[in-house]
Image (cartoon, rainbow, N blue to C red; front, side, top):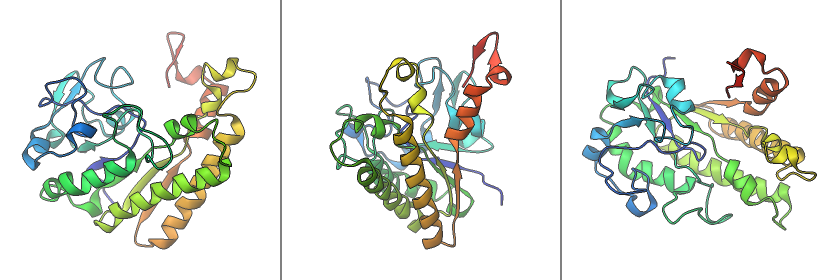
Length: 256
């Protein structure tokens, strides 16, 4: 199967800046500007610079697709693998569990509905759902924001992740069949956490979240046998990088 376009609805990476935004914090995806026309979306271009993403350069999706990695502007329509990124930095799964970080932050549950309402009508003319990969990487903000919650973590994580998959179900029901889910990185080993006697989130919290995510991903696959569901173990991979950083270092700097 050849996966050509890549649709991203995630909460970890920063939103792609666009040319028609003319004021601070106005993106396709801004909570204050949730709607957009088909023409605005198709005319939109990825802006690549040191300030265009939270990474200070191309984010993981841009590297994965090769779309928008060059300095300057790129139309997704000109990419061999088109990237339509509806992620928003600071997003959590939903306000049922955590408040929005900023008044303009778009939670995941709103990202999916925004896509179906405004983007899908435009993209349906140039892409096909069955040849599109829909990627989801969410949970980093959620696990930090609920680290001191009085609700048992197993209950909280189970409910949050169930909401994630309910949102994914709406994407499936719109015709999309290929899904990539990324689990949590080793957030217990962030620079700040390794200096703490009692880090939050700790290893057990991260592992529990990832275990529940894997279980519900398997359930989602069983409930939708017409789909291809891939869960990438980000945690194991990055823990391996931390244990053996030499192959990933450049000029004495670890690149992850």
